[in-house]
Length: 378
Image 1 (cartoon, rainbow, N blue to C red):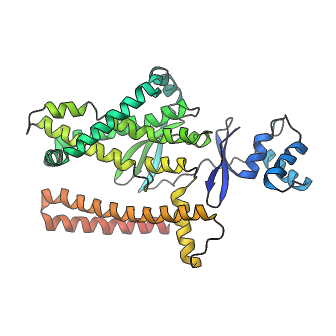
Image 2: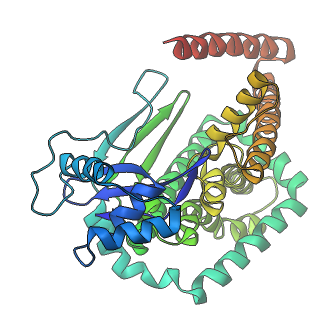
Image 3: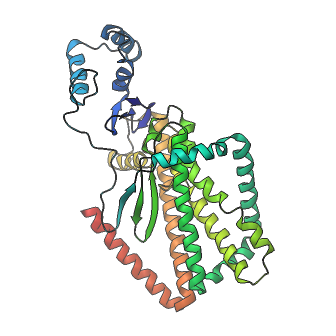
């Protein structure tokens, strides 16, 4: 068994647990996790009970011990006991549908472990610090030259072949991005058990499953694993910058590299925004020791609306954090929606004119709302 450190889930503290024989994951409460960590054969039940009483101010009677051991036995978690009689569900994911889903392809763990043998040096401070400094300098330069870069980048929207190259570069960088998550998870003691394709129409992208990061004993290891993808995406832009600087103004090379810098940077930086369920959210979630910061925050806001502002089941500091994050995430979602609508209109207007573009965007929003409502109803 691998038992992770405590994380907060709503008002409670929980542990993630993995049975390495079957690959199944469990989620147990803080009290159950406290007991499981100590069932190593090195202490008697009486000794464990004394420790439990000292921490939780409550003693375990014979009946409660029987319930705990019976539950562990049914899951096949006790040495010398029967094998697991009822397999628990794996870490839950969204059901597959036309609108969203995942298609597993391969288990890359062995291949990535071999790669890590050659790439282990990239995790040393001697590489990471200069690399991140170079990325900061690159992004600062892009910010200074953003007007010029943007004027050159949008010209690729009129050239289908250039658009195809940009899209291919961004999609391949996503593949490298996901491999970085897997390699980093393995680096800190986990596994990369699955690579596949996920879709949330109209987006299609690769993914790498790294659920073992929830078992890491140190929060910073989880944060590093979540941050690795965006860091690598930005590193891939470093060789593009000198090409743009040396290319002839107005040339196709100049326009193409400008598009790669602008759209590649935008994709990586949006991925770091902590209010959407991307890497930035995962980094914040793990840094705060949370299980589902966004979901718990929205549930708290809904509870406040229903109960007139009373949330007695939450510690005050946690309630304040959830409330602040929930409000901020709603504002960020509205802002992103407005930005996407504006960008969609602008891009379409280059081909169809302003009024036609507005009509197409309005129709797209209506269809999207109907599909989302239908999916939620189901």
